[in-house]
Image (cartoon, rainbow, N blue to C red; front, side, top):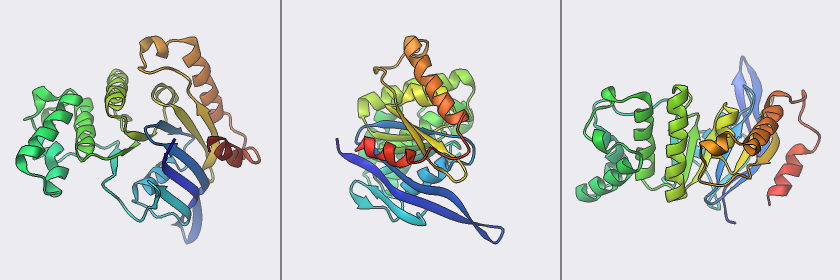
Length: 269
């Protein structure tokens, strides 16, 4: 399979109280085309930093960030980024928000409207296409943000805890809707979350990070069929994978096992 995203010994340092703080330490991970990968880990493990580097919002201090075989030197149209905050323009309707990137790109009005309508339908917001964000629920706002990201036709979606602010029921519904859209569009997805159940339910593989400094701890395959469903969520197979991820996240030794990062990277090639 073709790799879409490649972290190659990526490290990132930040200045902190006059000293240098290592937030991400020699991360090497590959994400294949069309794959849905989730990233979890304890607080301070660098998962949001890694996503920001993949998005081109941060430069690595060391190593190489490669997307589609090219070095990343900033944001690009092939990467759609969705954050926990909805970041919608409150004075624009759902349709206008979804069309925004297309308008900036110079797309003609009729084409913009057709593309926006397709993705509004895809995320189930057809009845609210002409509504302002203030009348939408949190889950609907996030669906609008996802439609806007899809509309500019990125081949990669980078998602940083996009459902973290939602209530439990809405979160589960959003997971199913995201997987439904992914199954139809098959974009490459890298999804950061702190929720172990969410990480397992969505992913082909779960990347578990270790903290202080942030580094690769373990990569856990999720050998569960798509489409995912409540029956899968409640299955013994799901529980076994979820328990393995839970132990990897919450029962880590003070330091990652010697050679763990290198062994996991080698196993992915």
